View 1 (cartoon, rainbow, N blue to C red):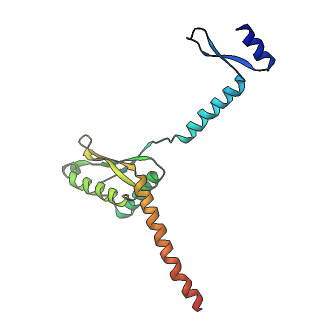
View 2: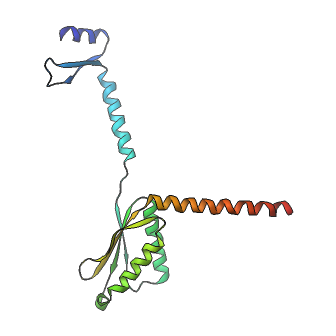
Length: 168
């Protein structure tokens, strides 16, 4: 051990014990500051690569107007495209509770309109007497397919524009 320590000092490095339970102790000659820095960089990189999936919530009412429905549904679509899960809640008031099929119809319309960006993770169910919930999750395959279809549509439109420009 003392000769290893003197060897490490000669090289201007550190003697680091690698396995503390081993007999005899296992050590390594290394630059400990550099090792700690690289370990911190790896940890930082792994944190950067991990995605923070949070659950967003959008609340609808059974008597929602068309414009409000479209606005809220676009926002749900935006959340899904960012990679968030979305909890869609229908809030019933008064005698609306007697007609859960109205809430189910709205949730079905929402899931239809966002089918190209997300999929239903938790199907519509009553959450207590006054709420109906559904959870949507981002669907990478559906997003990729929708993006490919959009790209193909744009590619099909481009050649059609070129001959018209040549005739002018």
